[in-house]
Image 1: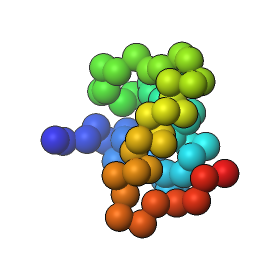
Image 2: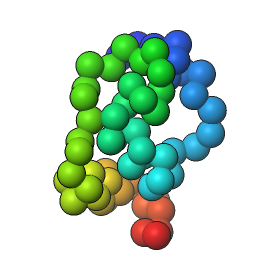
Image 3: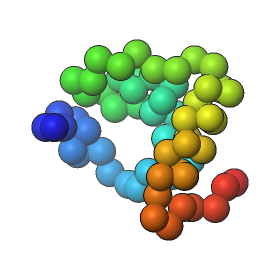
Length: 64
């Protein structure tokens, strides 16, 4: 998968807060991204997705 230049140039690390903001509306969080995903409006659904992704990590970050 080839990431857009906008996504590649996004500085910083992904944490719970940044991932949540991205999942609300990716194009607002990373302007000029080529991602077609519209986002997840419901907070519970975003939280569930973040917890799922956390469970896939070899060394999961502590929950806030």
